[in-house]
Image (cartoon, rainbow, N blue to C red; front, side, top):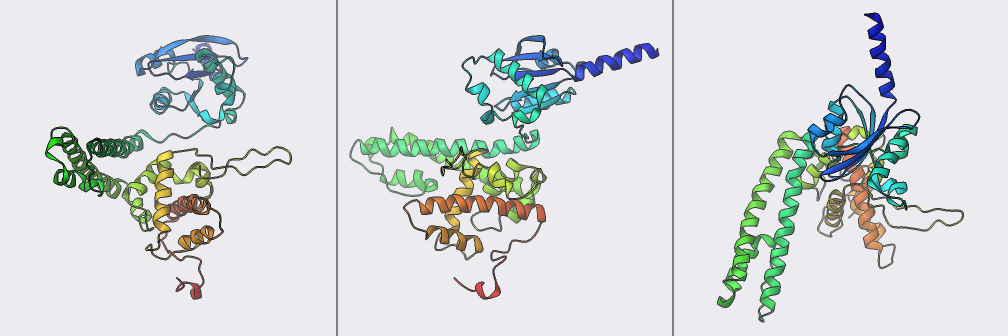
Length: 364
């Protein structure tokens, strides 16, 4: 009996040295499995289903698996981890050896992923996926974005079609476009552009219902969003997107690291004496980055309440140059991301003029 136990333990120890790489596709994915010496044990294709993945990567053969970020990477990671495997999700932006190779193919990419993770997982610059619960709640926000884009497309189409016949629809907010459009629409266009107005009205009603749902989700499931909304310009959509995107505030050692995570730090391409000034990296979640920039616009308005962040942003705008305001908006967005994280982890109440001397608190 003891002999059989030792044999099973030895097999398990050998399996731990196995590494695998999966090049994810939409319907089929290529995989490669190798041993500790980098020799091929198994390679081929698997369907993108939980059943097929379980058959190729059973719990009895535990290994370290590397895969790239993508549409399917989150649920694939979750499923493989439930089978007992160690899964590393590689940052696709950092894998120039794959994207820039002159021998690029799906089987070769899978093999390279496995070999890299066998040498050192840090080569892959692994990312941390959000949980499936957070991903589910985030779909509400993503669905709303799709509806907003659809409504904008229909509004632009209605305006363009009316112009072809010499008519111009009134300028107004998107929420009121359908009603204003019917008032100004000529009889000849009621059968064509009028149909677009009906769809725009339907989308507006759905968007209002989704806005209420987002406010409910933020208040009931993520109460920390209430504290973030104390900052001027940050509403429930921005606060909920921020919380769901980061999910775990403890993943950052310093709040300042959030700026890099959101792609709001300058890119670097230093070599020798050459160190040019470049734009931001635009890494991370693009939607959250754009929301923070929108909040920065609201913060720098003249009508916005006084706060330390507004004063700092306005000083950047005064430095001159035609792009000074654009650079200031990005800088304020980065500072705002850091500020929201600090409020989140400390639980402190927001003080708009925190750190300002008493004499300067009354300054405009």
